Length: 419
Image (cartoon, rainbow, N blue to C red):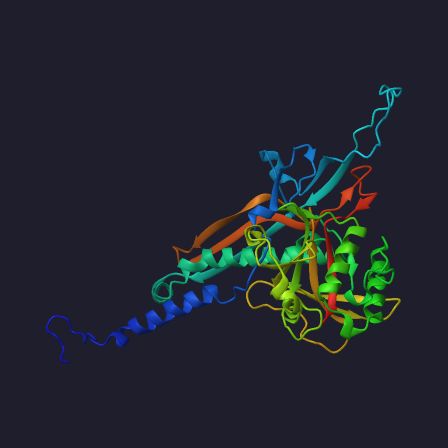
């Protein structure tokens, strides 16, 4: 094509020469990137399972599976620890007959306390936004999906930290300054192969001794028997009651919610598996509106345990010996950052299934997530950060004073099965 007088440039007529097709391709690619890491998330964002608690409220213990603690004034936003006060149940026998007197025989209202912690968090992304780089990035819509990507990251982070709290009492954020807390193993640990017996690991308030007790139990099981079937889940329900784990109430039933790892869930639903749910399927009845309350639920066993599949379930590996076991926890973190073990060599490599009752986890969030944007050098550089403050933790109840001296954990347990 000849030069046009007065223009002095050859203008391409092919759209590919102008980068249009490439731009369209990159637009489609960037949309795929936005959603590629999404893996099914259960329970933790379900509003029907979460109770809202203001920092200054004095109330009875709520009946929800999760507690969401939020400040109710501007001063609460600066606090990284709050201690909430609740009333305990009455347990006096009362007075009987017409010769008894009430004066001097009243039962004193007793209190229980729970401490909730939060710590700062932030994540930022940046990119050039001027000249050729600006034109290219606009074509791929990079900046238009920065905030959705951060929001997705935040959602996956919540799921990771919630599971970490179930296994290790608190999420990693709470180990950082200025909070600097430890991460002892959940006080309630159950191995299906050991059944509802005294062979289950014995809790010890010294974190390292408790870890050794769990490691010893892991090595004592017969790996082939360490799975969840209908009979084992019925035993698990009885064990949970013996541990005073408080069930949630639904449709007149007292229920625990069992998050099964994908391995166990698949095995549990195979007809060939002995005593599996599939072998009872044709004779079973389900609660019709169960899924409205418990996301991902598939069945109720014994009118007591709701079974859900958790594709993001953690793993744990025990290494060392009976006097010095070390646990290595693996979690699915944001994106495709899968840190779970892939090894299935022996009984010290376990999948983690999680049992939830009332008040299983607490989330304290004094500072809501918010975006902050910055441009430098005439807009040449562009960055967005997502920041806030929160923490996930097991709800520990102190039943004498607010000083963590007599602790009860009655909301969750971890069930370790063979990988």
